[in-house]
Image (cartoon, rainbow, N blue to C red; front, top):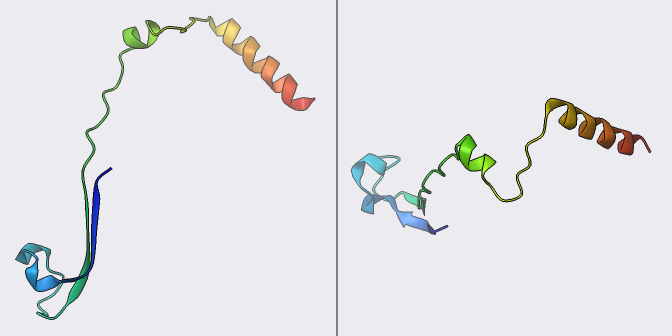
Amino acid sequence: MNKIVREHYPAAQLPEDLRPSNDPNARVTVTIEEEKKPKRVMTLDEIFSQKGFRRRTKEQIDADIRRQRDEWDD
């Protein structure tokens, strides 16, 4: 992640719409971060085609959850 931080930066050097006040002697901390592109959401077909993906029935999933809960009780 690209990030630039400038402390005690003269507010007078900022564009007018970014100045916090009309005080020409004001000092500010400016933080600039590069925006990240949003990640693309995978389609169900893409998820199902992933290597190692194993389709399970509701009953199989319920049985796995019950088995895991039983392990927690031990």
